[in-house]
Image (cartoon, rainbow, N blue to C red):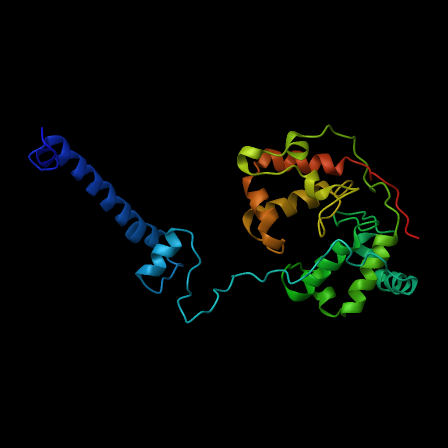
Length: 272
């Protein structure tokens, strides 16, 4: 058979090949330009090229002259580095101690909660600093913390962070039997894109802005993971916790919360 005869519709195989290719192209076009836009009505495209760019994962132009689409939730505006609030002054710690008297009803007079509020004694200063900024800006909301943080100045927030970081880490008020580490804590789940919890939340070396979790309330930890998974808490920078929490099973959330609640602080910390 000559090349001319091979690429003609008289050739059954050529006809079938062209038909299949055309069918796949039509199906892809219908899926990409009809079905998916109907399933995602919030997406708006300026033109056909904009739609192609979006499908290919390329930067898109906004529908309205270069405006960046706004997130439905306020995002954290805190800027953290490993040295954020690393060397507080004694004056700052003293002012924080005075301000912290208003926090004692929930977080305990020594920074150890008797309820299901987080323990703050010995917490990283950058963590308390970031969360208070987020409560004040509305990036994170809570019926008690939001009104409290609304009236704090930048210096107040720095002082409170310095004071609680200065306090020694103490055993939790409700001690629990220590549990073995679950797999998700020490290994994560690489096939689902879940890093080990300790890669960010290590007590001796941690990612800036990530809290140490040992001895925190099981109910509190579980509630925060569920809030991240449901998108109700959105103040994690770059959505790290939301991405992780959405990939966790309910059993893994329960195991991680129970494990961290059962652990004593790794170190008894004092600050010079």
